[in-house]
Length: 236
Image (tube, rainbow, N blue to C red):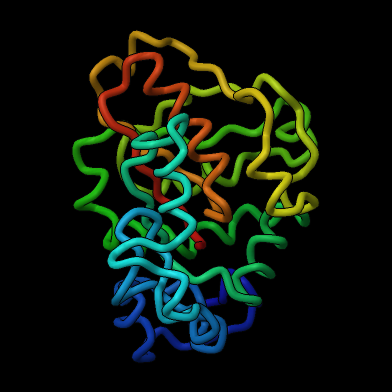
């Protein structure tokens, strides 16, 4: 008998969703909770990993969504982020999970995603340096942990804390889409620049929303000498 890392209800480990989620050896979510998650698989945007089936056909052009095409048409951001891949659709249930993690301090729930993240992303990050998106010092003190770092630590490879936030911003969840994309200045700086020269970097974060945070981090890493920058997130 095990206990679900989200709802804390007891459950048997011999249910079929475990195989579907890649958690067959030691599932950490009950069948009810796991069934509310939607894995991203199938036809996705080649750049950001967005699931095409979730929005009308006119919002894509070939293998790219319109959002990524707009990013690539901007000379400042063209070619900055090589690709993003995400585990799950950012649906209402995943929003609840991440809110419990970030705002109610339940850091243990991130462990429920480590196994499926390792199996899903192994080919992407196996030769890369893992760099979690940092919180500001104020936010880290308030929360007690960095959720992106918790996800990165479960991927089974060394994690490098190479980025620092130089600006304490209002929470992203309180900003509109336009406000996120019109961020002025770069809120990140690189710590120990010599550690990233000619390296392939994979940024780790909880959610890809507009892509502005990940692209800002990618830009400062490339400007400091990184070879390529991609990203992995829990939700998209």
